[in-house]
Length: 547
Image 1 (cartoon, rainbow, N blue to C red):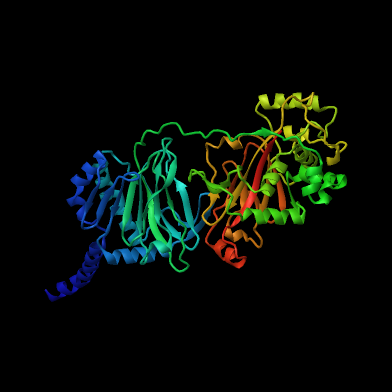
Image 2: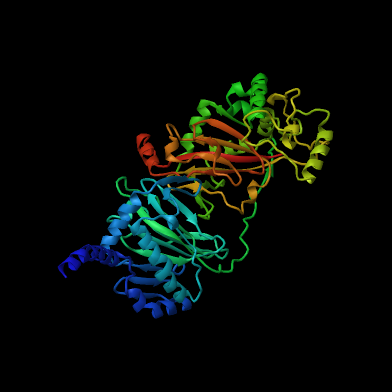
């Protein structure tokens, strides 16, 4: 008898361990079952509901639910946190976000991760399906994210085929709004475009937030401001039938205008004389034709540039915020009422003299006096045939070697260069009835500003020459953001980056497959502002020219 009991002791110990593990399995807060019917009613009828034990359904700005103490076992949560922090994280960075993300957690075998996965994929999915009255698929996207100092996820709606519910579970230390990293929810306009932040949710340990993915579920993770804390979370999507989506709103094109009549004197008033030398223009055109981009330093005369910088600090300038937040966020100067020097500067970029000078710099046909060969007509006919076959191979900002045989390259012929002192007054080229046009703006950049790539951007659907000239960015560091980045459509790798640089004229020729954005300006830029006694970031003149 005793010998049998001795043999059973190891089994008892093993059984004890199994029992301990069973006790550590993740279990949902029992409150969820208690209030399920009330939550379901509130969700279906678009009503608010709250429970004193820590559950809230809110309908503004769109329906979402906040559940405190989501998982019962604190011991399991601490083990989960430690297990997650041991994972390999990958730096994720593009126009929309910057943070570190783990691999897909659906295949991770850690005990605590497996336990969380089980409760999410089974118990919580069943609860959610009952709340929504929709059968959610067994496939669930699940990953872990670490947000640290200056990390951010900008405004987006999460919409992707099959996504029905987005969720996030926070495993953060004590956290306050001053640490950043809030989940900001946007209200929407009549076009389902985000307007402004209507609600900010501060991360809290063991709190889960979920909402339905829809055309108006615009949200962001605000920039992390704490240099010590890590915003650790597990997030993903439950899949099911997608909500109906209206056609995406397409913004109207910005107004484009032909050049303003001017003579060459405007160039001599503003521009560094070296760039008005014909031999210099030939060298610039050679380099531009090879690379499709160039940076011309000290472009304005020093005295003019200093006057422009001084005027940009004027409180009389009227700035308006450009949005919506899922596409851009920066200030644009209203041209009415600009200080005289800035109005003249804007006029320079629209002037006939500058159109011709840019033609000399680039070889593009931005003026009827631009250099051309006798074979232009033939080339244009061949180009039209190529385009009709869908085989245009335009030179893009990506090309770093030999020129391609392209529509735009064919137009970049070297001939007798015409200096700016040969500018003639208006008229259309008899050989080419199309009129070159431009659009432009004066922009103000500071912490929190950015632009995003978006699939409804009609401005990038054609060949164009980008012009950029920055002011007030002395000692700017690329770690601050504010960099203009060019990428190929469908790719994340940067083809070209432009860090803001005072009084340097950047010219970039892009094709239909080249996209651009300005990287989010982060908290680090504030230290630069203090160093130079500036509080307003920097400014740029941004113009686009079309042949």
